Image (cartoon, rainbow, N blue to C red):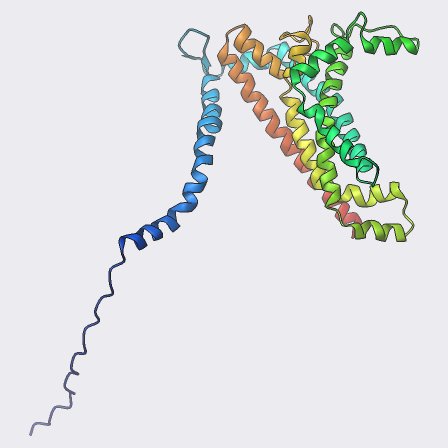
Amino acid sequence: MSTPSTTAPPAPAGPRATPGPRPSLRSRLFRLEGVTAPYAYVAPFFLLFLAFGLFPLVYTMWISFHRYELGSDPEWTGWDNYTWLFTNPKFYNALLKTITIGILSTVPQLLLALGLAHLLNYRMRARNVFRVSMIMPYATSVAASTLVFAQIFGRDGGLANWLLSLVGLDGLDWRNGDLSAQIAIAVIVTWRWTGYNALIYLAGMQSISTDLYEAAALDGANRWQQFVHVTLPGLRPTILFTVVVSTIGATQLFGEPLLFGGVDGGALNQYQTLGLFMYQQGWAFGALGRAATIAWVTFLLIVVLVLLNTALARWRDRDTEGARR
């Protein structure tokens, strides 16, 4: 005897879902614009960076492995240019002069800028006039300021030697001396960049909360103690920025020594920087391959110095936080 089937009959199919209306051309364009607009906004920067930043850097590195002179085709030489550079005593002379001029200009420059910013941070008469005057040396042309200082440091009739004679000292041959020429160039750099760094420090000081100064004053701290214990800790990121920028500028120093005494950096290369050495090889001697090698070594030197400054700043911050704990 067969049992009746218990399988339920299939349910009737419901109405099919009708597809929505297709998006119009305008809505699709709006959606495409929302996706591509951010890339379109940043594309000009990357195109300019590729054209004027990355390509010259890579091409300079490629040229540094060639013997490339003006009017001739590049000839592959491998590491010969680097071997020539690191066995050339003039390179080490230029490196030493770059470091010494950088120290002679950067340290006084930042100390003076810090002091000027601290004074301008207080309420004083004609404060805005002094602030505007701080930026005037930076706005002055490098050629104009260097030519004026070349007259100031002249051997015969220069203002610097006249001031030395007032205190009973003999005049110096600033251009032909070794240390004297470096001091003269450092004075030019310091005069031009002190006001610029002072305004940066002033902006950093104004971002420090006044409550910290009021609390320090209630604890009996004088202005010097407030400067040491409140201002300097608050300016650490700003100081690190100015140190890094000044280090890069000192490594690339070119205009002041060139206009002060020529591409040779003095008769004995006593103030020939890396920038002058590169310019001499590339345009005075026509050895573009060697000039490219100097440029790349200078670039790597800047990277190392920036990383070293950053590492020292972080190490100092860790020591300070450890001492507070």
